[in-house]
Image (cartoon, rainbow, N blue to C red; front, side, top):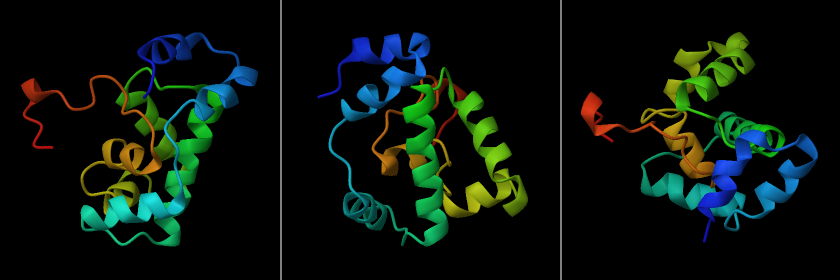
Amino acid sequence: MLDINKLVMAENMAPCEADDFLNGLEPWSEDSARAKAREEGIELTDSHMDVICYLRDHYAECGAAPNARTLLKAMEAAYIDQGGRKFLYSLFPRGPVTQGCRLAGLPIPAGNADPSFGSVH
């Protein structure tokens, strides 16, 4: 089970400590991501896996994102040549941050699914 204190400390974490932080998450494998994706009606392609691996690498280097907007901007910049936000939403229709993090086995950034904003997910 993930320790909430680790999430709180992630923002102040040095890059060398980030690998230890990622290793503290529940076990993840490509097969588990594919199984979760099938449950959500998605068949993972190489493009999906590239984004999922990007999310895991970003998390290992930077720790937990302070919010979903920051993470989405980083993802858009990384995939600008493929179409940025439009490309990411074509892969993950329920949101590249929410669905991507869930499939990558990562915690979803705070404030990402706020019912007060009419979120349907």
